[in-house]
Image (cartoon, rainbow, N blue to C red; front, side, top):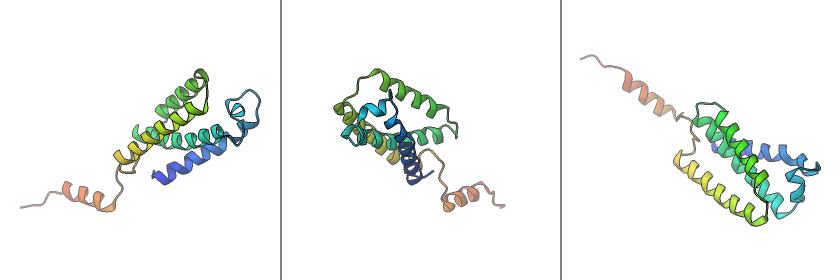
Length: 131
């Protein structure tokens, strides 16, 4: 899955969480719709979407690591008191992690290269030439 597709999934995750901004007792309601923390949190959701896609791709398509990471993130949010500074630090750290993953995976996010030349080259290398 490409970085663009993973970003699209991150945007969908952000939209999915929007209704929580209007439900009493949720973390999202406490952010205040339209506040700096609200927007930082939704940007974090997009970035997390990219990382969760990478975890799923890197584990051969299994979603177990992505589910465990999501659970760990939710647990941390529930334990650590929120603030704009904490959200900003989390955003910067997560943005750095996403950039590192994109650079280190050459934008493939854990999926094998699908370049036709790469596949053709691998197929040709496997063919024995009679002498």
